[in-house]
Length: 168
Image (cartoon, rainbow, N blue to C red):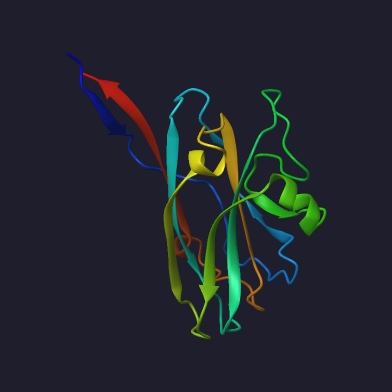
């Protein structure tokens, strides 16, 4: 008789630079992560957790939106302006983004406190994509806090933990 056990790989850092990102009233401008390549590991899921830090005196009752996006095919084809690299991006429109971005987490900025840390996750990437983890995916972070996000790179950390099963 076999036993199936859940197995977690060691967490790895997602390459993304959400520091000093300007506010976007329409949530179309933000930062894209480098692509997370799951094609070799073939994890059944990837758990994402992270930290986002507010800038100086953010506007209360604003939001930070964390999205996931995936490649369309193995070419790989990236949607809209995404390119799989850690870079600032402005999607074509909120409507275009609704077609390919999967809302993973929302941070409600509930204070005007400068440099306040907001923790996120973990959230399941597979759950965002209908129960199957994509071979390659990335994050897109945008906010409308009225000020740039905190400018220190170490104050924004995002981690990925692959999930698999073993049979003993």
